[in-house]
Length: 243
Image 1: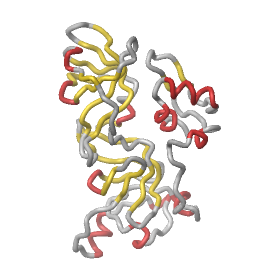
Image 2: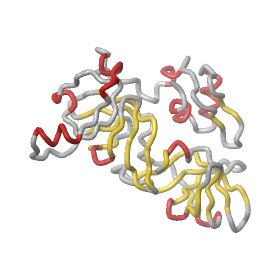
Image 3: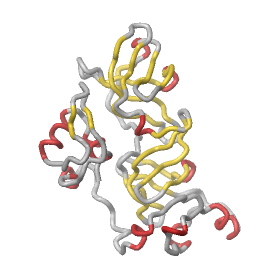
């Protein structure tokens, strides 16, 4: 298995041309977030964006992604990518389950969604919207025993959480400190609010289209960094790599 974050910013290299054709800047999922349909890449010279379908990936390494030829790339027209990174997760009772930080993939199949508060399986996603992810499964007749068997809580970092708060079966980890916060039902700021990331600290290096540095790890985000990220269409990643 691999994390979606491990694919972002990787070089895309053509085997036939022996050339660098771009860098991965985003990912395209299907509407129900069941699978990764492809990667969105940008040509460093033309700054045009292309779609690399997952089936056309030949191999992946720690440094790059190999494709057969640049001819497999399709022009990418701006549309909803259904990428949940940075979106806030609510369950059907309005409980805030955190902001999506990463996706765990097995090949192209989405296995788990990771937030800053918990992890849960793909099948527990009810809806992926423009701003939010809704957590919840279809109602099924089940015994109380099945709930106790399926939920796995870290006892060292947990306080008691009522069934009425969660009503979910596959939450794996929940941060005790977040659950103790009395403001747990208060929504996070929406990603479009740029002021919400001013003063945050970078957790990783962030690079632009030409692999130039936008912000370094431990930099404090200011307006200049935000402007550089916007120019490279990486505002979402600026949020993703900071806290």
